[in-house]
Picture 1 (cartoon, rainbow, N blue to C red):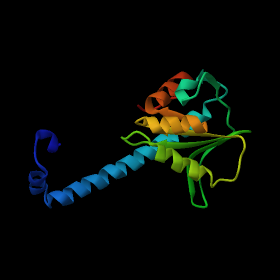
Picture 2 (cartoon, one colour; picture 1 turned 90 degrees about the vertical axis):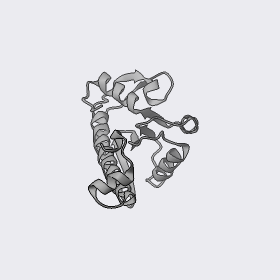
Picture 3 (tube, rainbow, N blue to C red; picture 1 turned 135 degrees about the horizontal axis):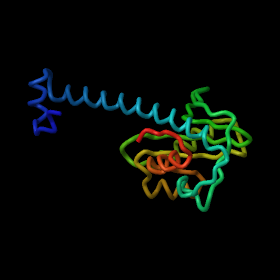
Picture 4 (cartoon, rainbow, N blue to C red; picture 1 turned 60 degrees about the horizontal axis):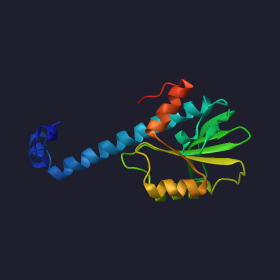
Length: 173
């Protein structure tokens, strides 16, 4: 709040104690902690959304895919954390959807998608697997090209919000 009023870091540090560098580090840690917590909350919301797909047909553009897409009904929607592999959402019922949720201020990069594909590659093989990458701030062009080339569904915060509204799922904006 003091920065918003035009105060410099050194002046703020003097008012609240400590050095400007110490205050910047403290603020960075606090923002990172809040960001992690928001990310966990969004992962939970996406799991709730996945439970509500139930055979609905939606515009593929909400998933970065062509045409219309009929969404599956999943029997199991969970987080997965086994053998050093952490998956935000694993949804199964004849086919498996593996979902990564990146709730950051920067658009997802090709490197982010490559890391996701590598992580999924450590799971037991599944020929009926669909990958879906959700990024709060959208995607860099190179990430979109990579996703399309590899058949990865991708959605931004706005896409997820629209999907939630279409399905009647309450989703915090």
